[in-house]
Image (tube, rainbow, N blue to C red; front, side, top):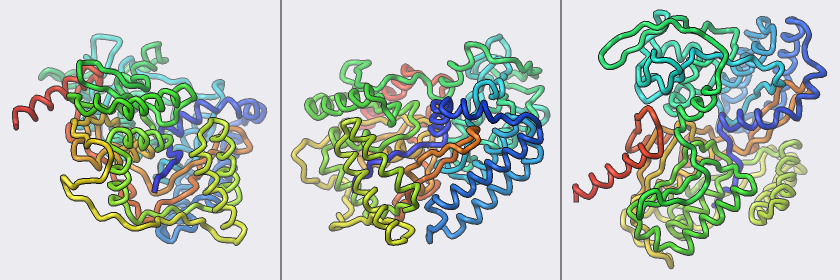
Length: 509
């Protein structure tokens, strides 16, 4: 069963809010709370609306496989309400919604503030950027000589760094039980987002080259270096979508985005077609690197189409059928969810994506039929004969030559949703090796839509479907075969990692 879906990670949802928040800003500007008490009241009303929207439309509300969902949703609301009386301004409003999301513990559900720029708290930093590299936070870049690049944070204000990250970061963002979220979120310990419910560190201890340094932090407005370093600290260089050859006979496939715009869709299609039309180039390459740096999910069709061109469609279909043979998809057939999926038909048709539009129409029709009957779900069942599990070296009928070229997949810490769908496919093949960071994880709830709240100050995230009997469990991550702990995740450093591993493999033969 092929899943063509819009799967967004927590961070992708945040980016989506940032990119689209201007549409609600005019409304928000006209209804900005004027007093601390008004901010508190507005938060309580918006939180209740977000709770009700989730209760009425989230698949978990009626999911017999997750009977604890309603209790978890109520607990998340209560945890946010515990801060409500302390919400006095936009920063508190934003942080309290973050607490709701963290308590809900699902990157595909919750609500986030969409504050107009005039209300958003100004960012501050201590003049340097940190990055998580598996065992702690390190200085990625600094505007002064101290702390030095590469120095490791040991403690701040008498608290060990891991404890402080849990207290200041994971209490409001991300999921601390997912290794990939440490790689993405832990670095935010040294960024002041204006959260009024935490205390920013004042003095930190660093270790570097066998020496220990105590450094007083000077919190200041961000400079022009901040945004560049913030992005590069965890992703490294984000290459544009496309196929390049940085070294002779080594193919580099950049896939930073599974939610492409029109130009990127054309590039994806061209790249995939080039692999299909000139497959000898891949068959005889020294290695193929699939670069997912920057990827935050989107639609799984892009990685599936590419995998079919690279390894052969029948091989991909057979291995995926054997990997997760009994997966069903239950679509929550509420009125609003059904309308949303119906709207996708027009959107995809307008983008000249006929197959995807047909996919949306099939499910929209199924949801409407379930809604008309009063059923809570439209169930898309796995059908057809179940493929036997393949064994290593098992011959798979295909009209293409089997790809044996080493394939390296660069995984960033925020990889989840459609990015994880890509790893599901790529790792079916023995010639694939993951490098980089551990991934994030998914729940079983997918296919989000976003709805603005009447205040214009926040939006609620609603998943439309739930996977049942999916092979990859909720909360399951991918761990890299080679963890890349270089401070700089540069293309040059990853190229060195790949070449060193290729040499090691040749010497082992």
